[in-house]
Image (cartoon, rainbow, N blue to C red; front, side):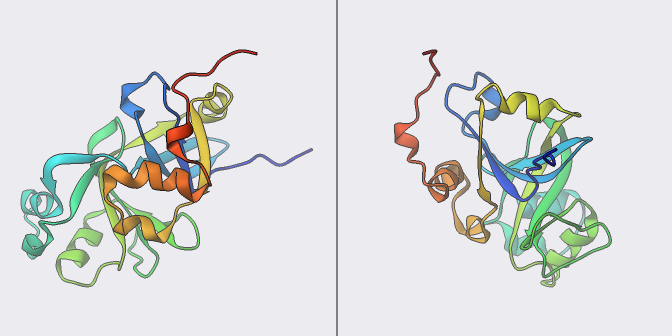
Amino acid sequence: MDSPLYYAGRMLLALPGMGDENFDRAAIAMCVHDEHGALGLDIAHAIPGLTLADVMDGLSIEGGEGLLHVPVLRGGPVEPQRGFLIHSRDWGGQDAMVVNAHWALSGSLDILKAIAQGGGPRDYIVTLGYTGWGEGQLEDEMTRHGWFLGEDIAPGLVGVDASRRWEKSFAASGVDVRLLAGQSGLA
């Protein structure tokens, strides 16, 4: 019997015409996926007007003034008030969970404090909220042609503007998004 295919460490990309506006042009960095469910962060949608400096100010973390250029992204519709960082593994706090060879996931204040003090991870993406699936839910959705399983989460995505990560993630898989149809047909 084949072992199950889990997607942690890979990109999950919304196909055009999916029908759920929460995931229009979503580029989800899959952080956890096992027999109990899945969790990912949409890294393609910045929250307008919100920066990491704003978040740190709201949490009374000093030293975040230099982070006005770091956008905060809408990680997904679940728990939109909760912060998560997907970051390079050169930093490991008490709650850092390995995602793949390059990335880890954290959600505690210690990583924000480390970043504010200049000692955090080299690469990071900040989100509020996450995308989650219950047991078997993602596997079921994959059979309905709404998602495309992309390559591993690329280290270079940090340097790509959030609005271009969906397109760039498809390109990394050899797919030109201009050729994708907005709906599927039946033959």
